[in-house]
Length: 169
Image 1: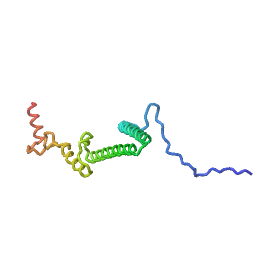
Image 2 (image 1 turned 120 degrees about the vertical axis):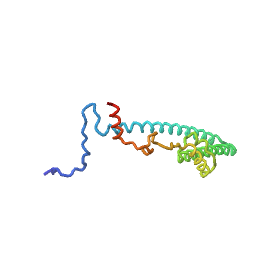
Image 3 (image 1 turned 180 degrees about the vertical axis):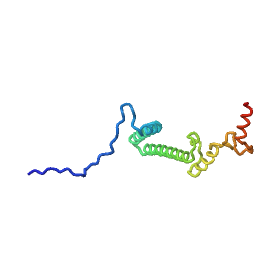
Image 4 (image 1 turned 45 degrees about the vertical axis):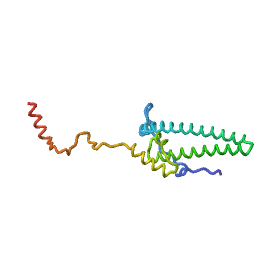
């Protein structure tokens, strides 16, 4: 006699939450804000990704050039010249990364990051601190906009309303 499967109360896969579909032309509730919030960061992220891809393409081109120089080197002098060139490029890139990191740490604009002076990270950070003092936004002495409730005038709104009524009649 063949065995029949008996329905069990336990299911191997529990279905995910049921999602109500809205009428045509309407967005589901909750997704409206998510889409508007994702639009702005997506554009910023896309721009940064494009910049990173462009930078990576430049590095790949430089790598191919160096590989071609190294493979074409037949003498020790040619090999040493190619490796010296490569070391110079590596040092320049390391300096660029260090400048970018220090500038980001002190929230300096990119234009000022290029102007940092020093050879060690400590020297660069000291210079960045000095530049940061010059760039930091200067807050006004008073943010009241000219209206200060503590300016010494005793203003009584009830009296002001009564005087306004007297002038009106």
